[in-house]
Length: 103
Image 1: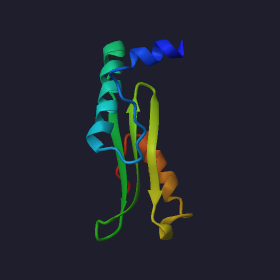
Image 2 (image 1 turned 45 degrees about the horizontal axis):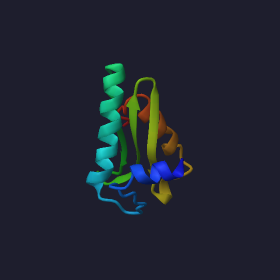
Image 3 (image 1 turned 90 degrees about the vertical axis):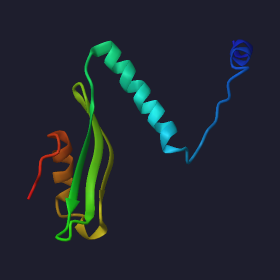
């Protein structure tokens, strides 16, 4: 079986990269999005929630993707001085609710 796989990949190159270009990562996300849409007729959407200070600087937030009935949170981060103050919970709730504005 390995020999067959080896022959089938003779014109392909597989790489493992720790810092690929963003455009290459986008190809993967776009590809799975197009495939999922072709199978379900439903599109997903990015969800971004930001926690900002009075100067409107980002001091925390969450980034994820909502599609169908699932939510994939890729990043949830808070600046050190904002941790243990429930802001992470609010950012998480914000992603699950489509990112409401919390004042």
